[in-house]
Length: 147
Image: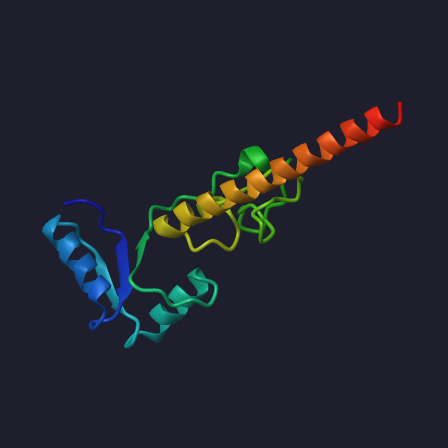
C-alpha cells in the first residue's frame, strides 16, 4: 500500500469526493475520510487551510514537509512558519522577485491552486518586465531628445 497519512476532507453527497475516494480505493491507497458536515473540527481545518474557503474535496498529504524558502530568507520577507509573503500580484518584498504555490504564505497548498498561482505569477512577472522595459525605453528616448 502507498501513503497512510492521507486525509480526504469532503461530504458524502459531493461527486468529486466520491470520485476521489473511488480513485484512491482503486489504487489501494489508504486514507482517512473526514466528513466535514459531521466533523466540525475537520470543517474548521479546511477553512483555515483555504483562508476561509470550503472547497471539497480537500486532500492533505501529511508528509511533514516544510516550505523550501530558506534560500530566500535574505531576499524576501517570510512569515512565522517560513512561507514567503507576497502582495496580490505575487511580488515579494523585493521588487522583481515573485513567489507562487505551496511556498507562498496564504496559498491553499493544493496542486491545482499552485498551478493556477504559477500561471498568474508568470503573467504578473511579464507585466512587471514589460513595465520595466517601457520605462527603460522612455528614459532612453528622453535622454536622446535632450542631447
